[in-house]
Each structure stands twice: as C-alpha cells, then as structure tokens.
Length: 272
Ligand SMILES: [Cu+2]
Image 1 (cartoon, rainbow, N blue to C red):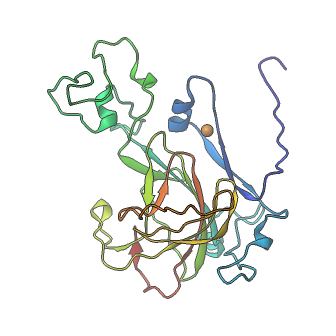
Image 2 (image 1 turned 60 degrees about the horizontal axis):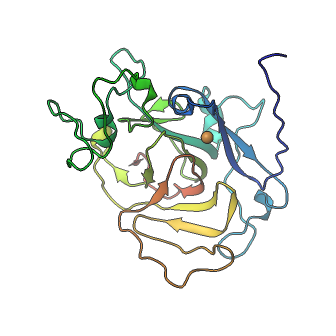
C-alpha cells in the first residue's frame, strides 16, 4: 500500500529488555517527548531466565509473575496488580503548561539551567552559555534539539507511587528522557511530596541485566559502590575509584533489569 512499509523482526536476540519508539527522521526528539514508546521483552532461549545463576552459582529464582495476556490489566485492577512481581518501568521527564499541555522551551538557556530573567544569553567564551542562541531566530522552539524538564513521568504518570508487598520484585527499568541522565537509588523518606527527606538506610538494586541481555554476574548497586565486570573477557588492571554520588546511573535509552527486595521492611515505609 502506498505510504506504508512492513518491517519484520526475528526476535533472535538473547532474552532482554528491548523498547521501541518512533524514529522519524528530523523529529525523533519530538516523538520521544510527546509520542508513544513501548517495551518489547524477549524471553526464553539459551540465554533466558531459566539459565540465570545467582551469586552462589545456583539457578536463580527470579521474581514473578509478569502480567500475562488475558490475566487482567494490572494498571486498572488492584487485585491483579497485587500479584505481579515483574514490572517494566519507563522513566522520562516532561514539563507542562498550566492547561496540562506539554511545555516547549523557547530559548537555549532553559536547557542549561541558566534561565536568568533579564539576562541576554552570551556567545561561547562569555562565560554564561556554552551554546549560542539567537533571540530573534525564526526557528520555532519545537526544533530545539534537547531539553531537561522539571517533572518526572513514570509509565506515563507524573511522580507516581507503587504500593509493593514485602517481597522481591523485578523491575525492568528504562531511561527514556530526551537528554536527562538518571541516577537512581532507593532511600526511605518522609512522605512529603517532592520535599522528601531521607530517613534511613538505602536499599540496594541487584542488577541482573542491561540492554543486551543478562550480566555475567549479579551486581549489587548502592550509592558510591562499584563492581568491575569483565569486558571482552578481562577486567582492566586500573579500575577508577567509585564516584561517591553514583548509584544506578542510566543515560537515554539505557535499560537495567534489577531485583529489589522489599521483604522485612516496616509496613508503610516510603522509598524514593
Ligand atoms: Cu531510539
């Protein structure tokens, strides 16, 4: 049919977390900001869940179940949701106008956190902005290449909370902002909206997979920790020291397949 095309995918990759979104030439950033995106989970095969090993080398018992077709929609049914232990989580950023429509920045200063009212953006070398911006440009702001927005959206909802059982969960994390990098950690906090104050000990992510499949071993991630993993079969001799602020750092389109253990935590504890 004119104007349409068929693309076939064999799904022969190792089991992993894939995702899809529109890559229309010249407007991918707008599709990432405003358009749909989805997960595409590949399971089974010689590199599938059944062959994952735990830290002792035994067959791993991964948290489940995941939602199944015909099993009810966990988004709309609390009783279905209560049984689910594997959840895909896409983290993005957005900004909104008063009427709820998406906000598009109209100047370059917005991107760099230097939006000082009354100042004129400067050219490189002037010490204010790194990238020149012409106030009289006839280019609409929708053509700005990237921006860093002020509202975090998870699976399409702003600043949502997930009620969990005292059990292990498997989260398929995807960072899908236009430009923002996320540094994810879980600390118990006061339940006071965005002014969350940290109250106690961080709980770790146990990362088992990334973009291309499962990792060669489980990686425990806490803020300031680092675990060397072999690349091309070797671990480099000189490993840089761990960044004290670094937790689960995720750049655009990166994925992390993690297990979080909520068992043994006090009922009602809020983590952020
Ligand atoms: Cu893409």
